[in-house]
Length: 620
Image (tube, rainbow, N blue to C red; front, side, top):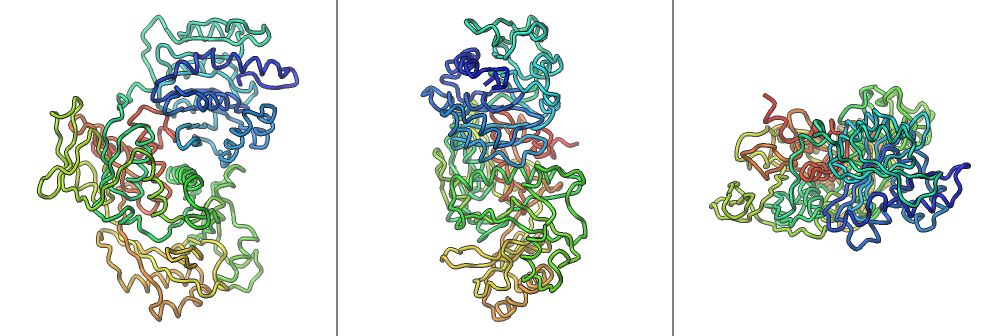
């Protein structure tokens, strides 16, 4: 709630605030029949504003399809304290428990927390509110002006914060604030709000209501360069791999009728058919853009896995140990405590557990001169299971064995125009107002004009049955290649996997014997004792191989979003996920949806813009 429980604030005021809070914003009546509702809150505090809004959405039969809450906090409470605050409100406690299950690894920047099957989205910004508001890109329907009045959070009447807030407001945006102090009233009035006190309130509570309706035409808005939100209709996604399935799921949740087309005979038939893949955050001493993206991507992937996949069969949050063969520690110098959920220096327990696989006889703390990181958020997942889970989202229909050769723009069958998807004989396979190219390396060849370059990367892995676990590490290990020691294959047998090779400019997914030898050499360096134990399997041909083709962009970042070209309206791309498709796909689907619907971005604006599909086309 906007009023916090403190030693100076009795519980009955909190109950009164419950009765005032949503009505002061015109909710839930204001959001009835809307496709989405976007709330901006300055100060997450104890989380009760969010919980009340979520509860109201959950119990309202006229609720919008999507509820977005964007909230900021520079000094977030612990999960334990959040639960303690919620415990005095039994009806909010079940929601608070769900919130706290995702309340981890809250480093500076934005974090997307997902509830109700992806229909309630909390975008939580950690840091200074004024700076964070420069990193979003949406129009707010409701504003909660709140936050704990501490040195780490702005006062309610801070004019600089209010100025930043107004850039997210449209005429009619309603605001509520827990105090009607004169300085707050003055600041809001000067910012363009019509202000009055909430009727029938207790004097010491004195909530304030306001409506954005300036006497001038606002010159600046956070969304001034945003395209007009798309109205959901028909959409075709080309590609039933990780990228295509993730985009299809994100769009279907927003009301699109999505048809997924793939040239293969089943889902995940290309690079996403990898038997099992590793999940681990990218770490760098400067906490690079790629590192920040990988953490956000992992959070998004795990949210889907925890909700839709079977733990220890389809995926496992086992943790991953990374051996740093380049000699660098990998962590930023000022790595905060919140970052330890993601990665930290490997401790004696992890190093000792690795002894058997390395074969060292030295003391655990000195077992190796190679630095090592422990990725607590690491694990493994089966790509095919993730793809099928995403494609089960209501609103998606899939068609396989459909090879698309070209696209043709038409303006006759739809007021906004549509795309015809043609096969090699120029027969129309499908028609839609929106098309998403998510066919990996083949995506560039489907573009009507030259928009970007993709580089094919062929990779091969080796896997086999676990016959002797004594020389296996107890968790996945990466560094010089990646080794997953134990997963259940499709036959239900315990298996291991080692990979992968990295061959540029090769778009043929054939199995090569020389790659098997190269993979064994990598294993010898990564885990010498494990390699010795598996040597017979390699020599006797008892191992199995898999090969696939990934693709990368010139800057090695995904290419995501609409092409922003007047000649190519309704054409989007999601490709170039490289070797991190398992980490990036779900996040990229949400970034694409945010661009299309003028929604809050799941990550900082500068990170999202680094992925924009138009960055190459308009770089000159």
